Image (cartoon, rainbow, N blue to C red; front, side):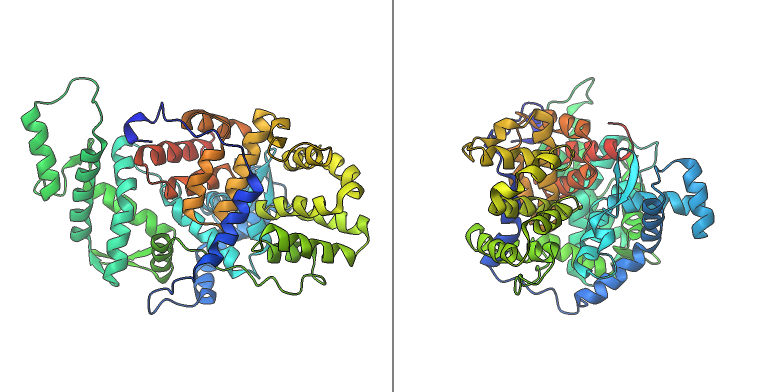
Amino acid sequence: MTSRNLRDSRLRLVRPRPLATARRAVTNRRTRPAPRPPEGTPPSAELARQAREVLADAVRVARWAAAHHAEGSAAERERAAAALDLTPGQIHAGWDRARLAGLVELHGGTARPGWRLNAWDRDDTAVLRGWVALFDAWSLVHPAPADVAPAAVAEVVEAVPQVLSLLQLSAGPVPVPALLDLLQQRVAELREERCEVPYGPQPDPATAVAATAAIATGTEGPDATAAGAPLSALLDWALEGLAAVGALTLGDGHATLTPLGNWAVWVKLEQICVAAQSPAGHIEQSAEDMLRGCARLTPGPARAEYRAWLAARTVSSAVTELLAVARGEDALLRGLAFEALRVVGAAAEADVRAAAAQPSLRPYALLWLAEYEGADPEDTAEVLTREEATWLWVDTAAAVADHGESSLLVRHLDSAVQGTVPALLDEIRAVGHPRTVQVLVALAAAHPDPALAKAVRRAAFQVHTGGA
């Protein structure tokens, strides 16, 4: 897949194995020891405390919206501002951040608490993952000036990881002129790498070569343009956006990564995840805790744990508890709950059939019923409609984004039923999954192909702003 052929780029049509993909997001992490963060990095509890401070207003807004079944209307923002003693502008910003961080989700236009919000006060991992989701979406939190060409904005967004890497390696304040110099060089490299056939009237070749050389050497000056926009102004916008999400601080002519920002850049560079809890002592735990513990087990040991857990309970109470977890917001637990229900077998059939009436459970329930009725596990995906398969793809991607590594999220593209990336994006926007924005932002941040990442980022912006 190349950047010049995005429209015709084809996904490999493979049989979707949603739970296997999501499970690998966790089990693959056991194959190597987790690298240690740079010296001086605060412990996770301190990082989570800082993340909670950054998202404090968003959490208050999310809890109010969930309690009042809000829809995000202007009238409701006014009510929330009065109730929470915040300005309407702060309410609007908090609402946006809450959605991007996965604290609140819209179901049929009505706000419901996301699983991270439910775990906010007790789970540092959920807090850090929520903040990282906000960090990945910094360009949505702090929109670019309206008079700037989209191409210029896209170039800067693509170049920001290199700017962040310089800040992380410097381990201290970096002068803004040095960041501008790096941004100029990176933009020039991106233009050379694209090698796209231009459309419309083109400048004289000698003029174009001189302009590219000027950008590469930095001699065009801080006010020269990138696709018609000043790079210096766009750098200021990017730094302000990253500061708005708590990733860096701005001083007098310099920028410095915060401990949160330094840790996040390191995590991105190392492609690691926060370790899950140890899967010990499942029998006496709740269904949710049992499934979280089993997430890191391979299928055989996990089934043994399910059997032991089920043996200690009545079938009806166990099935009820597992389906309650499946209705929650954690997509990985949703898939694991249905794996546990496969161990229950015939006694769960009536409840699973009833669960098929709920949109968020329907794909899982249909796959369960197909296997229960004797279908080959490799062929069960055929019972899903195109829309149901797309919903399941997004749900699985949400599980990978929450619990897995970015490389696995990129490989998850191959399991889509759509033949091309544009077709996949169109159907993802149409299916209305509440985690669509977060999934697209995470995929754009993870994918190495600049053109595909740009298209995915554009789709995330359209969904976020209601343009789908």
